[in-house]
Image (cartoon, rainbow, N blue to C red):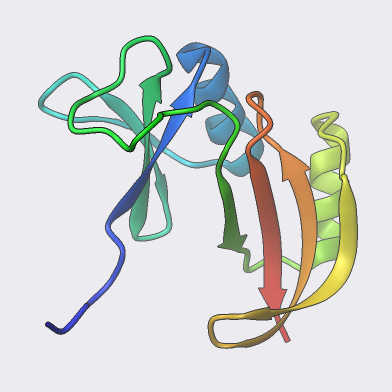
Amino acid sequence: MKIKDIDHITLTVTDLPATLRFYHEVFDMPIIETDDQRQSVLCGKQAIKFQLVDQPHPPTAGVPTAGSADFCIIVKDPLDEVKNHLTSYYVPIIAGPVERNGAHGKITSLYVNDPDNNLIEIAEYH
């Protein structure tokens, strides 16, 4: 088997409108609607899909739980600008900047939570 890419991840959330607003407004991710009327956001070439904790979309993970995700997004902007942007939206930075190892080398990261407390690492490659 030859893996090409990751197409999407699915986050379990408690409030879909608040989640869509956060990812769209704070991260400028376009909202897309699929044929099955689900709403997602585009994150680069991948999608972040959402399911409500009380209305999961089968098949599901063992126990779909809001706030259990931890993922990293890569930004093109310098982290100082990202930090200012997050501050302008009143998004608390819970850690960083810190040096980490990304999939393709060294990164510098900031950490924030979304409305369900999913951990989002925002990083730039060196």
